[in-house]
Image (cartoon, rainbow, N blue to C red; front, side):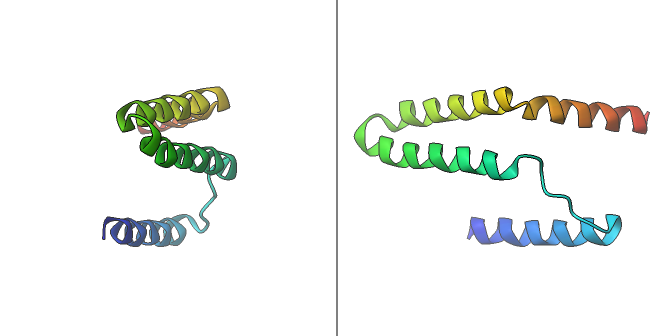
Length: 89
């Protein structure tokens, strides 16, 4: 039920952004980030059956965070947040 709720909220937000802005731009590097997440999710699912779920899950989370840092996603977020703060101020 949570997944259905999140999908409804996503559709609602896309509708409102499209209505206000006119277009919904896809996130940068969305396909590559999604692929990395799916690979780590598969490793977490399989690995939790073979070893400690806590260790496997933590390892996958750390690997995904390292991927985000290496891919420069956090710098993009910081640039966007910095722009928003300057524009609001």
